[in-house]
Length: 495
Ligand code: NAD
Image (cartoon, protein in one colour):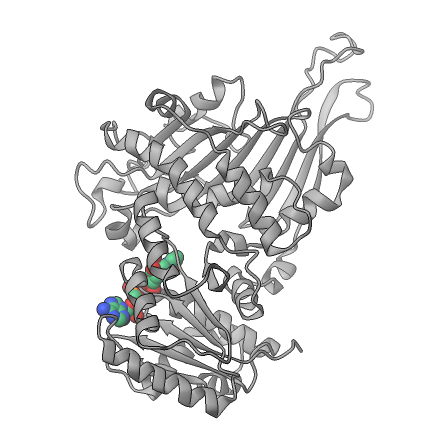
């Protein structure tokens, strides 16, 4: 049984999709494991006038029967309270403060409070400033703010948002969620890099030819079209998830594995993201938007509800990033993310340089070329590692043949592993900010993303330019081909 933690969660947007799909099941798992026992309470706030009882009912329904028995779910739900709330109404914060104080007494939570913003981003600043002005922060316990993505839509709006929350919360109280940082294999990256000399020694420009980060989805935009039309893949996936993964792959070794040291190294790395002229953006970043599939079974993005017939919004991005520092000079990092691709996968592929083959003649190798060594790290849906090495097959003399050394997490282990939100909530109640993004990282990554966005906004794209159920637009493959490289995850030209 885990050590019990005392706290109150105040969830703004307690009736919403995120709260029901992710937060309540994750909190329940913390309850089953003992992180939460008797001394916790959850206040859900939203606009509708619900009773505590009705709210508890919705919470119980959000927890699948597969993760707990009914009795446990029901005792968990007794810790939940509801407060009807309009984010703009100061009186509602006063009522909330009163309820939190009462529950703090009742559950002996040590006046610890976690404020969770599960509302639309335009409310983040308003809620934070009312928390301050109506005096919701407690002096005795801790006060932590959890903030969901998106953190702004460009550097300007992110800076404004940050100023509005920084007026109430210190940086060491702010937990900016990037749920990719809660995924097992992403969290494993520092361990993998810095505890295996066999990897640490070659993790640099001397041995690596290029690094590829792919976040591919099979789903289309679904019901999120309203939001997506204002965002696009560059903001939705690259600024945060893809670059955060890049940060962990490319940062220098931190002095110790602490939140401060990891953030320092990631921030330093992000400060080195390149500055691109418009011409360089055009060369180094490509965008796409999905059309229907070859068979016409899946609709094009522009045919989805709430999407403009001539929408210029990208559902696919691929880009080349060069980091000009001693470790990475000349090694392209290729990032890619797209919707409606042919497979759901998040993976990192490290492609090694081919050594100049000095000692074997072509005849000795039976005219078969050796291949680059590739280390692939699979983040989801499967979790594992695969190292492809040159070898031979028995009886084939020196004829080169790729062998892969694989490690796959079993289905059973994967189903026992903690979901991202569960891990991140544990970190929040422990006060560990390592797996969250800090302001400097946001600032640098937005500065980088803005230059691409600005160029794209001034140039009308030719969309759609790839079929649903493909590998994305041709231009994505051409981006690598120009450097003599190719995507590891790809075996045909999608269009
Ligand atoms: P949602 O629309 O399902 O829920 C929004 C919540 O805000 C509801 O509880 C609603 O009652 C409340 N609300 C709306 N207007 C309000 C007002 N004026 N005063 C008080 N409460 C108000 O949204 P969601 O999908 O749960 O997303 C919540 C946040 O989480 C957003 O910032 C979103 O970007 C982020 N997010 C969501 C997901 C997801 O999977 N749903 C994933 C990543 C990030």
